Image (cartoon, rainbow, N blue to C red; front, side):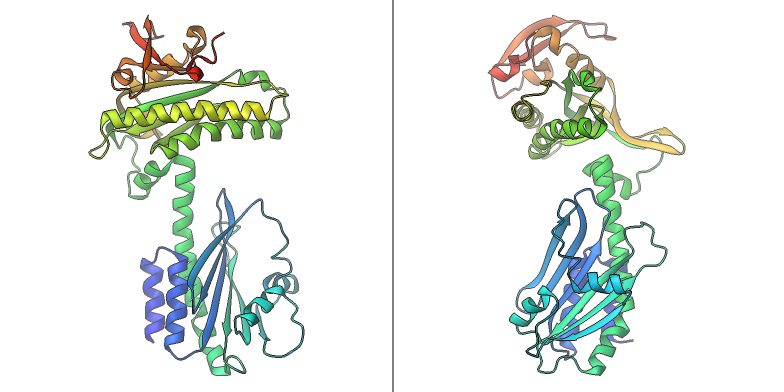
Length: 394
Protein backbone atom coordinates (compact mmCIF):
# COMPACT_ATOMS: atom_id res chain seq x y z
CA UNK A 1 0.00 0.00 0.00
CA UNK A 2 1.42 3.38 -1.03
CA UNK A 3 1.62 6.52 1.07
CA UNK A 4 -1.32 7.96 -0.89
CA UNK A 5 -3.62 5.04 -0.11
CA UNK A 6 -2.61 5.10 3.56
CA UNK A 7 -3.27 8.82 3.74
CA UNK A 8 -6.74 8.48 2.16
CA UNK A 9 -7.68 5.74 4.63
CA UNK A 10 -6.49 7.91 7.51
CA UNK A 11 -8.62 10.79 6.22
CA UNK A 12 -11.56 8.42 6.00
CA UNK A 13 -11.23 7.86 9.75
CA UNK A 14 -10.15 11.32 10.89
CA UNK A 15 -10.97 13.85 8.18
CA UNK A 16 -13.62 16.49 8.79
CA UNK A 17 -13.91 18.43 5.51
CA UNK A 18 -14.11 17.31 1.90
CA UNK A 19 -12.15 20.39 0.88
CA UNK A 20 -9.13 19.26 2.91
CA UNK A 21 -9.54 15.73 1.54
CA UNK A 22 -9.53 16.84 -2.10
CA UNK A 23 -6.71 19.33 -1.56
CA UNK A 24 -4.48 16.78 0.15
CA UNK A 25 -5.30 14.15 -2.47
CA UNK A 26 -4.45 16.47 -5.37
CA UNK A 27 -1.19 17.61 -3.79
CA UNK A 28 -0.11 14.02 -3.17
CA UNK A 29 -0.97 13.01 -6.73
CA UNK A 30 1.14 15.89 -7.98
CA UNK A 31 3.89 14.78 -5.59
CA UNK A 32 3.95 11.42 -7.36
CA UNK A 33 4.84 13.22 -10.59
CA UNK A 34 1.36 13.38 -12.15
CA UNK A 35 1.07 16.82 -13.84
CA UNK A 36 -2.19 17.79 -12.15
CA UNK A 37 -3.45 21.30 -12.89
CA UNK A 38 -6.99 21.10 -11.50
CA UNK A 39 -9.14 18.71 -9.47
CA UNK A 40 -12.88 18.98 -8.91
CA UNK A 41 -15.38 17.17 -6.69
CA UNK A 42 -19.13 17.73 -6.49
CA UNK A 43 -21.06 16.29 -3.56
CA UNK A 44 -24.84 16.43 -3.17
CA UNK A 45 -26.00 17.07 0.36
CA UNK A 46 -29.09 17.15 2.54
CA UNK A 47 -29.04 20.73 3.74
CA UNK A 48 -31.82 23.34 4.10
CA UNK A 49 -29.69 25.95 2.31
CA UNK A 50 -27.55 24.09 -0.22
CA UNK A 51 -28.25 21.13 -2.49
CA UNK A 52 -24.68 20.49 -3.60
CA UNK A 53 -21.14 21.55 -2.69
CA UNK A 54 -18.58 22.14 -5.44
CA UNK A 55 -14.91 21.76 -4.49
CA UNK A 56 -12.25 23.01 -6.92
CA UNK A 57 -8.50 22.64 -6.35
CA UNK A 58 -5.99 24.32 -8.63
CA UNK A 59 -2.23 24.25 -8.49
CA UNK A 60 -2.05 28.04 -8.27
CA UNK A 61 -4.95 28.84 -5.92
CA UNK A 62 -5.48 25.80 -3.73
CA UNK A 63 -9.01 24.80 -2.69
CA UNK A 64 -12.24 26.70 -3.27
CA UNK A 65 -15.60 25.49 -1.91
CA UNK A 66 -18.92 26.76 -3.26
CA UNK A 67 -22.39 25.86 -2.03
CA UNK A 68 -25.13 25.74 -4.66
CA UNK A 69 -28.45 26.83 -3.19
CA UNK A 70 -31.78 25.13 -3.78
CA UNK A 71 -33.06 28.31 -5.41
CA UNK A 72 -30.28 28.43 -7.99
CA UNK A 73 -31.56 26.92 -11.21
CA UNK A 74 -29.41 28.35 -13.99
CA UNK A 75 -29.18 25.06 -15.89
CA UNK A 76 -25.39 24.94 -15.50
CA UNK A 77 -25.35 21.29 -14.41
CA UNK A 78 -27.51 20.10 -17.29
CA UNK A 79 -25.00 21.46 -19.82
CA UNK A 80 -21.94 20.23 -17.90
CA UNK A 81 -19.89 17.09 -18.59
CA UNK A 82 -21.52 15.37 -15.63
CA UNK A 83 -25.03 16.26 -16.74
CA UNK A 84 -24.19 14.66 -20.09
CA UNK A 85 -22.75 11.57 -18.41
CA UNK A 86 -25.81 11.08 -16.22
CA UNK A 87 -28.16 11.41 -19.18
CA UNK A 88 -26.21 8.87 -21.21
CA UNK A 89 -25.44 6.46 -18.37
CA UNK A 90 -21.67 6.91 -18.60
CA UNK A 91 -19.46 6.49 -15.55
CA UNK A 92 -16.14 7.40 -17.18
CA UNK A 93 -15.16 9.95 -19.82
CA UNK A 94 -11.86 11.35 -21.05
CA UNK A 95 -11.74 14.48 -23.20
CA UNK A 96 -8.66 15.98 -24.85
CA UNK A 97 -8.57 19.78 -24.71
CA UNK A 98 -5.35 20.59 -26.57
CA UNK A 99 -6.80 20.62 -30.08
CA UNK A 100 -8.38 23.50 -31.93
CA UNK A 101 -11.86 22.02 -32.14
CA UNK A 102 -14.72 23.72 -30.36
CA UNK A 103 -15.39 22.16 -26.97
CA UNK A 104 -18.88 20.83 -26.14
CA UNK A 105 -18.97 22.22 -22.58
CA UNK A 106 -18.27 25.70 -21.27
CA UNK A 107 -16.11 24.41 -18.43
CA UNK A 108 -13.66 23.03 -20.99
CA UNK A 109 -13.01 26.53 -22.30
CA UNK A 110 -12.33 27.69 -18.74
CA UNK A 111 -9.91 24.83 -18.11
CA UNK A 112 -8.16 25.33 -21.43
CA UNK A 113 -7.72 29.05 -20.80
CA UNK A 114 -5.95 28.09 -17.58
CA UNK A 115 -3.53 25.90 -19.52
CA UNK A 116 -5.44 22.62 -19.31
CA UNK A 117 -4.93 20.00 -22.00
CA UNK A 118 -6.97 17.13 -20.62
CA UNK A 119 -10.22 16.49 -18.72
CA UNK A 120 -10.76 13.18 -16.96
CA UNK A 121 -14.29 12.76 -15.53
CA UNK A 122 -15.61 10.03 -13.25
CA UNK A 123 -18.89 9.32 -11.45
CA UNK A 124 -18.62 7.33 -8.20
CA UNK A 125 -21.90 5.78 -7.05
CA UNK A 126 -22.90 5.14 -3.45
CA UNK A 127 -25.11 2.08 -3.60
CA UNK A 128 -27.90 1.96 -0.99
CA UNK A 129 -26.94 5.39 0.33
CA UNK A 130 -28.40 6.30 3.72
CA UNK A 131 -29.91 9.49 2.30
CA UNK A 132 -31.51 9.27 -1.17
CA UNK A 133 -29.83 12.51 -2.27
CA UNK A 134 -26.36 11.11 -1.46
CA UNK A 135 -26.27 8.85 -4.48
CA UNK A 136 -22.67 9.53 -5.45
CA UNK A 137 -20.03 12.09 -6.28
CA UNK A 138 -18.60 13.59 -9.44
CA UNK A 139 -14.84 14.10 -9.81
CA UNK A 140 -12.66 15.45 -12.58
CA UNK A 141 -8.93 15.95 -13.08
CA UNK A 142 -7.12 18.15 -15.59
CA UNK A 143 -3.50 18.16 -16.69
CA UNK A 144 -1.46 20.91 -18.36
CA UNK A 145 1.06 18.58 -20.00
CA UNK A 146 1.18 18.58 -23.79
CA UNK A 147 -0.77 15.46 -24.70
CA UNK A 148 -2.50 15.24 -21.34
CA UNK A 149 -2.41 12.35 -18.89
CA UNK A 150 -0.48 9.20 -19.78
CA UNK A 151 -2.35 5.86 -19.64
CA UNK A 152 -0.51 4.75 -16.50
CA UNK A 153 -1.41 8.07 -14.81
CA UNK A 154 -5.08 7.56 -15.62
CA UNK A 155 -4.82 4.02 -14.24
CA UNK A 156 -3.21 5.34 -11.07
CA UNK A 157 -6.01 7.85 -10.51
CA UNK A 158 -8.69 5.24 -11.18
CA UNK A 159 -7.04 2.80 -8.77
CA UNK A 160 -7.38 5.15 -5.79
CA UNK A 161 -10.76 6.70 -6.63
CA UNK A 162 -12.79 4.07 -4.72
CA UNK A 163 -10.86 4.91 -1.56
CA UNK A 164 -11.30 8.63 -2.20
CA UNK A 165 -15.04 8.15 -2.70
CA UNK A 166 -15.37 6.14 0.51
CA UNK A 167 -13.51 8.78 2.53
CA UNK A 168 -15.63 11.54 0.99
CA UNK A 169 -18.80 9.62 1.80
CA UNK A 170 -17.82 9.16 5.46
CA UNK A 171 -16.94 12.84 5.86
CA UNK A 172 -20.16 13.86 4.12
CA UNK A 173 -22.28 11.73 6.45
CA UNK A 174 -20.57 13.30 9.47
CA UNK A 175 -21.18 16.80 8.12
CA UNK A 176 -24.76 15.83 7.29
CA UNK A 177 -25.35 14.80 10.90
CA UNK A 178 -23.86 18.06 12.15
CA UNK A 179 -25.89 20.17 9.69
CA UNK A 180 -29.14 18.43 10.52
CA UNK A 181 -28.67 18.68 14.27
CA UNK A 182 -27.62 22.33 14.02
CA UNK A 183 -30.69 23.06 11.90
CA UNK A 184 -33.32 21.13 13.83
CA UNK A 185 -32.16 21.28 17.46
CA UNK A 186 -29.71 24.20 17.48
CA UNK A 187 -25.95 24.65 17.44
CA UNK A 188 -25.20 24.02 21.12
CA UNK A 189 -27.78 21.25 21.50
CA UNK A 190 -26.57 19.58 18.32
CA UNK A 191 -22.99 19.45 19.58
CA UNK A 192 -24.17 18.02 22.90
CA UNK A 193 -26.13 15.27 21.17
CA UNK A 194 -23.19 14.39 18.91
CA UNK A 195 -20.87 14.24 21.92
CA UNK A 196 -23.07 11.54 23.45
CA UNK A 197 -25.50 13.46 25.65
CA UNK A 198 -28.44 11.37 24.47
CA UNK A 199 -29.95 9.67 27.52
CA UNK A 200 -33.36 10.77 28.73
CA UNK A 201 -32.97 13.12 31.66
CA UNK A 202 -29.37 14.00 30.87
CA UNK A 203 -28.57 17.68 30.68
CA UNK A 204 -27.41 20.60 32.71
CA UNK A 205 -28.75 23.55 34.65
CA UNK A 206 -27.67 26.91 33.31
CA UNK A 207 -28.43 30.54 33.93
CA UNK A 208 -29.46 32.50 30.86
CA UNK A 209 -31.24 35.57 29.61
CA UNK A 210 -34.36 34.31 27.85
CA UNK A 211 -36.17 35.87 24.91
CA UNK A 212 -39.72 34.70 24.24
CA UNK A 213 -41.23 36.16 21.05
CA UNK A 214 -44.64 35.58 19.54
CA UNK A 215 -46.61 36.98 16.61
CA UNK A 216 -49.91 38.55 17.54
CA UNK A 217 -52.84 37.86 15.24
CA UNK A 218 -51.26 35.02 13.30
CA UNK A 219 -54.24 32.72 13.81
CA UNK A 220 -56.34 35.22 11.85
CA UNK A 221 -54.36 34.23 8.75
CA UNK A 222 -55.44 30.59 8.94
CA UNK A 223 -57.54 30.97 5.79
CA UNK A 224 -54.45 31.75 3.67
CA UNK A 225 -53.27 29.05 1.28
CA UNK A 226 -50.83 26.68 2.94
CA UNK A 227 -47.69 27.66 1.04
CA UNK A 228 -48.52 31.37 1.27
CA UNK A 229 -48.99 31.03 5.01
CA UNK A 230 -45.65 29.26 5.40
CA UNK A 231 -43.86 31.86 3.29
CA UNK A 232 -45.34 34.65 5.41
CA UNK A 233 -44.42 32.91 8.65
CA UNK A 234 -40.88 32.22 7.46
CA UNK A 235 -40.31 35.92 6.84
CA UNK A 236 -41.42 36.88 10.33
CA UNK A 237 -39.47 34.06 11.99
CA UNK A 238 -36.35 35.12 10.13
CA UNK A 239 -36.87 38.64 11.47
CA UNK A 240 -36.83 37.16 14.99
CA UNK A 241 -34.01 34.65 14.57
CA UNK A 242 -31.34 36.68 12.77
CA UNK A 243 -30.97 39.23 15.61
CA UNK A 244 -30.70 36.41 18.15
CA UNK A 245 -27.88 34.78 16.20
CA UNK A 246 -26.13 38.09 15.59
CA UNK A 247 -26.13 38.81 19.32
CA UNK A 248 -24.65 35.43 20.23
CA UNK A 249 -27.88 33.78 21.34
CA UNK A 250 -29.35 30.46 20.32
CA UNK A 251 -32.87 29.60 19.24
CA UNK A 252 -33.99 26.72 21.43
CA UNK A 253 -37.45 26.16 20.04
CA UNK A 254 -39.92 27.27 17.39
CA UNK A 255 -43.42 27.15 18.82
CA UNK A 256 -45.84 27.68 15.96
CA UNK A 257 -45.52 31.40 15.31
CA UNK A 258 -43.19 31.99 18.26
CA UNK A 259 -39.55 31.60 19.24
CA UNK A 260 -37.78 30.77 22.49
CA UNK A 261 -34.13 31.83 22.57
CA UNK A 262 -31.42 31.88 25.22
CA UNK A 263 -28.31 33.92 25.89
CA UNK A 264 -26.38 31.76 28.38
CA UNK A 265 -24.39 33.38 31.18
CA UNK A 266 -20.93 31.84 31.15
CA UNK A 267 -17.39 32.55 32.28
CA UNK A 268 -17.00 34.50 29.05
CA UNK A 269 -20.33 36.36 29.21
CA UNK A 270 -21.61 38.07 32.34
CA UNK A 271 -25.24 38.47 33.30
CA UNK A 272 -25.10 42.12 32.24
CA UNK A 273 -23.69 41.17 28.83
CA UNK A 274 -26.22 38.37 28.29
CA UNK A 275 -29.16 40.62 29.17
CA UNK A 276 -27.79 43.42 26.99
CA UNK A 277 -27.51 40.99 24.08
CA UNK A 278 -31.11 39.87 24.61
CA UNK A 279 -32.30 43.49 24.69
CA UNK A 280 -30.44 44.36 21.48
CA UNK A 281 -31.86 41.27 19.81
CA UNK A 282 -35.38 42.27 20.88
CA UNK A 283 -34.99 45.80 19.52
CA UNK A 284 -33.63 44.54 16.21
CA UNK A 285 -36.35 41.87 15.91
CA UNK A 286 -39.06 44.51 16.34
CA UNK A 287 -37.50 46.68 13.65
CA UNK A 288 -37.11 43.80 11.22
CA UNK A 289 -40.61 42.51 11.87
CA UNK A 290 -41.96 45.99 11.14
CA UNK A 291 -40.02 45.93 7.86
CA UNK A 292 -41.69 42.64 6.93
CA UNK A 293 -45.09 44.21 7.61
CA UNK A 294 -44.21 47.17 5.37
CA UNK A 295 -43.29 44.81 2.55
CA UNK A 296 -46.70 43.18 2.95
CA UNK A 297 -48.62 46.42 3.39
CA UNK A 298 -51.67 45.03 1.57
CA UNK A 299 -51.97 42.16 4.02
CA UNK A 300 -52.84 41.93 7.70
CA UNK A 301 -50.07 43.39 9.84
CA UNK A 302 -48.58 41.01 12.41
CA UNK A 303 -47.20 42.69 15.53
CA UNK A 304 -44.42 41.06 17.51
CA UNK A 305 -44.61 40.66 21.29
CA UNK A 306 -41.42 39.90 23.22
CA UNK A 307 -40.72 38.99 26.84
CA UNK A 308 -37.24 39.12 28.38
CA UNK A 309 -36.38 37.30 31.59
CA UNK A 310 -33.29 35.92 33.30
CA UNK A 311 -33.05 32.80 35.44
CA UNK A 312 -32.01 29.19 35.86
CA UNK A 313 -33.25 26.60 33.38
CA UNK A 314 -32.72 22.89 32.75
CA UNK A 315 -31.20 22.27 29.33
CA UNK A 316 -31.26 18.68 28.18
CA UNK A 317 -33.10 15.58 26.97
CA UNK A 318 -36.78 15.41 27.80
CA UNK A 319 -39.46 13.05 26.48
CA UNK A 320 -40.35 9.38 26.11
CA UNK A 321 -37.90 6.52 25.86
CA UNK A 322 -38.01 6.38 22.07
CA UNK A 323 -38.68 10.04 21.28
CA UNK A 324 -36.64 12.78 22.93
CA UNK A 325 -36.48 16.53 22.60
CA UNK A 326 -33.38 18.52 23.53
CA UNK A 327 -34.87 21.66 25.00
CA UNK A 328 -35.06 23.99 27.98
CA UNK A 329 -37.62 23.92 30.80
CA UNK A 330 -38.03 25.50 34.19
CA UNK A 331 -39.86 28.24 36.10
CA UNK A 332 -37.93 30.94 34.24
CA UNK A 333 -39.28 29.68 30.92
CA UNK A 334 -42.82 29.63 32.29
CA UNK A 335 -42.48 33.19 33.60
CA UNK A 336 -41.22 34.45 30.25
CA UNK A 337 -44.20 32.85 28.52
CA UNK A 338 -46.67 34.37 31.00
CA UNK A 339 -45.04 37.80 30.63
CA UNK A 340 -45.38 37.71 26.85
CA UNK A 341 -49.11 37.03 27.24
CA UNK A 342 -49.47 40.45 28.94
CA UNK A 343 -47.96 42.47 26.08
CA UNK A 344 -51.24 43.33 24.40
CA UNK A 345 -53.13 44.26 27.57
CA UNK A 346 -50.25 46.46 28.76
CA UNK A 347 -49.83 48.07 25.36
CA UNK A 348 -46.20 47.05 24.97
CA UNK A 349 -44.21 45.15 22.38
CA UNK A 350 -41.46 44.39 24.92
CA UNK A 351 -41.92 43.37 28.54
CA UNK A 352 -39.02 42.50 30.80
CA UNK A 353 -38.65 41.29 34.34
CA UNK A 354 -36.73 43.08 37.08
CA UNK A 355 -33.89 40.58 36.58
CA UNK A 356 -33.27 42.03 33.12
CA UNK A 357 -34.35 45.63 33.72
CA UNK A 358 -31.94 46.02 36.64
CA UNK A 359 -28.93 45.55 34.34
CA UNK A 360 -30.36 47.08 31.16
CA UNK A 361 -27.87 49.27 29.28
CA UNK A 362 -30.76 51.37 27.92
CA UNK A 363 -33.48 53.26 29.81
CA UNK A 364 -36.50 51.26 30.96
CA UNK A 365 -39.98 52.27 32.06
CA UNK A 366 -41.78 50.59 34.99
CA UNK A 367 -45.15 49.01 34.28
CA UNK A 368 -46.05 48.19 37.88
CA UNK A 369 -46.59 44.86 39.60
CA UNK A 370 -48.68 42.27 37.77
CA UNK A 371 -49.88 38.77 38.43
CA UNK A 372 -48.64 36.11 36.03
CA UNK A 373 -50.89 33.13 35.38
CA UNK A 374 -49.92 30.18 37.55
CA UNK A 375 -47.47 32.20 39.66
CA UNK A 376 -48.50 33.19 43.19
CA UNK A 377 -46.54 36.39 43.75
CA UNK A 378 -46.94 39.46 41.59
CA UNK A 379 -43.96 40.42 39.44
CA UNK A 380 -42.69 43.92 38.72
CA UNK A 381 -42.52 44.40 34.97
CA UNK A 382 -40.78 46.93 32.75
CA UNK A 383 -40.62 47.99 29.13
CA UNK A 384 -37.98 49.73 27.05
CA UNK A 385 -37.99 53.48 26.53
CA UNK A 386 -38.04 53.61 22.75
CA UNK A 387 -40.85 54.10 20.27
CA UNK A 388 -40.96 50.50 19.08
CA UNK A 389 -41.57 49.20 22.59
CA UNK A 390 -44.95 50.94 22.66
CA UNK A 391 -45.84 50.33 19.04
CA UNK A 392 -48.47 47.70 19.77
CA UNK A 393 -50.52 49.64 22.31
CA UNK A 394 -54.17 48.70 21.60
